[in-house]
Amino acid sequence: MKPKTLFDKIWDSHVVDSISDGPDVLYIDRQYIHEVTSPQAFTGLRKRGIRLFRPERTLATADHNIPTLHQELPIREELSRIQVQTLSDNCKEFGVELYGLGHPYNGIVHVIGAEMGFTQPGMTIVCGDSHTSTHGAFGSIAFGIGTSEVEMVFASQCVLQPKPKKMQINIDGKLGKGVSAKDIILYIISQISASGATGYFVEFAGSTIRSLSMEARMTVCNMSIEMGARGGLIAPDETTFNYLKGREFVPKGADWNRAMEKWQTLKSDTDAAFDKELFFRAGDIKPMITYGTNPGMGVPIDGCVPQLDEIPVEQQESFKKALKYMGFEPGMKLEGHPIDYVFLGSCTNGRIEDIRAFASLVKGKKKAENVTAWIVPGSKHVEKQACDEGLVDILEKAGFAFRQPGCSACLAMNEDKIPAGKYSVSTSNRNFEGRQGPGARTLLASPLTAAAAAITGKLINPADLI
Image 1 (cartoon, rainbow, N blue to C red):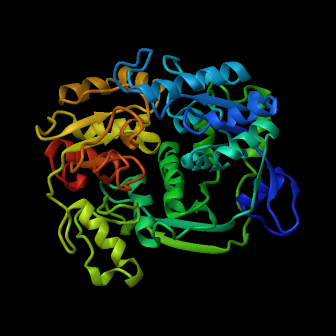
Image 2 (image 1 turned 30 degrees about the vertical axis):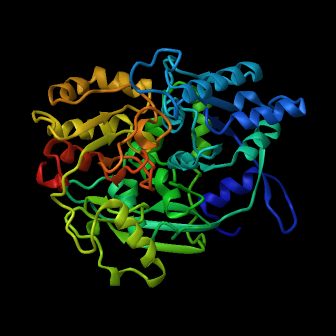
């Protein structure tokens, strides 16, 4: 039998039919929805007079539009209030489980799916949200889809999808001081560009990846989309199984044993062929920071903005445009640059491990007076953990306010917006123009780098403070 990649094993086992010279009809095990990309899909069902084919395989949460202070209903901001109420009405009408505002399981869709045990190895998972790739950390094929495809899955539990090419990215070695999963993925994107994996589904492998926690693996897979990939995944192992065991919606007893028998086969075969392979050394990775307006514009925090002649000719105009927007110059050193805001949160870095890392660096110190900091847990569960572990006390003693769960300042779709011209060190996933608010200047970084900036008021290597 021909050796298969992990991606091929999962994909091929979910193909219901193949269209000649066209896409596959792919069965979907789990669909996540939120308030932004689901309304038109529900309207489509309503117009056609049909119901969800398998509503038990869809889970809804409110996250993008919800406030992170004063989370009582009704929401004050009108557009957000309408979006969230519409989701609630649609889920009630069509029989979809909803973890809405005020629910003890509420949180960011790509946080709660994992922490509740809905996401499991070997699954196909979709959501009307590009960062669905997060769930690939469990050895699943997870990718974002458009609203018309959301409706397609509602109606049939399948989606039409061309099979992507396969890439394997190997990272080996031990990470240096102050370097985390966020730095790994920002480094990779800086090396291959924001379009370097376009057309591929990426499997992350190597000793560095195997050493990562599940939270860290989710960070890596979350941002696979930022290098143009259709998604990213990591083969499940003991770290995965230990994380999943005992979670609320994971199989129990004999069902767990049967699931484990299947999950332990989910790995790429020796000599399985990839369309492209890349290799990186963990020792080359330093704490990273972005300087431009796409996640590929990144450098080590103790490095400099590239010179114009270091940029390919076809990218020089966009490079100059990005630097003008950011208020930077070619060749300038970033370390020591003053900042205004710090955001810890999002589906990239809003998990308990991220809050632990941030708290570990600010413990016994004080927030810089010139910095406004938003510390936002990814879910009610993470919020409770942070309280139970005493992390909230550490943060508050250092001068930080701990907010309520939501997507928050990752994107300008709720009340948490960065003002125009202000510099924000953000643990989120995108730094496009206006992503955090009109005119906001976003510098993507890890929780440790964000913590270092929050207590010094400037960009600084977190390794210097550890």
